[in-house]
Image (cartoon, rainbow, N blue to C red; front, side, top):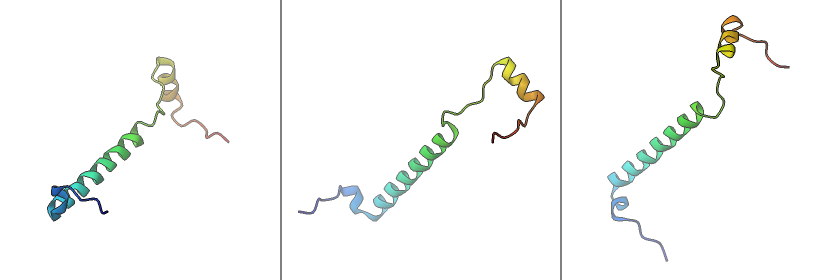
Length: 61
C-alpha cells in the first residue's frame, strides 16, 4: 500500500516551497554549527593581553 501525500505536497508549488524551506533550514543549521562549535577564545584580561602582544603564536607540531 502506497502512503498518500498531504494535499499541499501534491501541488507542484507546495513541493517547491517545502524543498526550499528544508534547504534553508539545513543552511541555517550548518552556519550555526560552523560559528558555534564550542571552540571559543578566552576573554579574561590576561589572555587578551597575551593575544595583543603575540597575535600569531607558533603552530603546535
